[in-house]
Length: 211
Image (tube, rainbow, N blue to C red):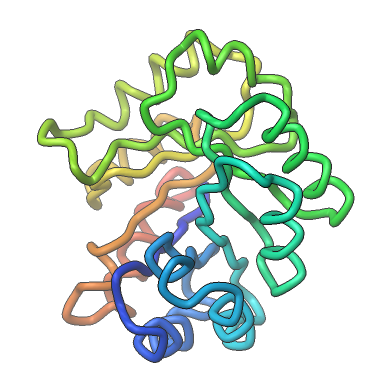
């Protein structure tokens, strides 16, 4: 299982400093949607310049203009780019085509997407499907139960990620469960007093199944 560390709601200079700190220490660094909206494609380039060992995910949350947005994100340095599962099938197909052509990866954000829609969009074999518990929701995510239920409903979807308040204990349990490819953690690392220490603890938890 891999760790994706999300940087959100900071200045570009702060994001660059965090990227430099976390380079080689997290599997994937996520340029969060707030950075995409605040700073655009320039920020993708700036963060990519800080990364040699760590994969860069651009959380563009594309909903339309799929080919254009994916081409832009990949050409500026993104390795993985996100599209909303709520987008039209044609938008998803356009994003997937660009990802395949560029030998890069599409992540589908399943925020508030119904089972019926997931059944319609489950045929992108190299895409990563991300279960996403909204930051605005008041209820707490039971990550292990959510992953188990999703896997039972959609066993043909092999590449899974999850985001939404994941803590160290949940990370360890998800690693033991052995279904997910990626866990996504944000402020519990980036807002920690010592982000390097925090990312090390999460990496140890994520790779717990190998210990």
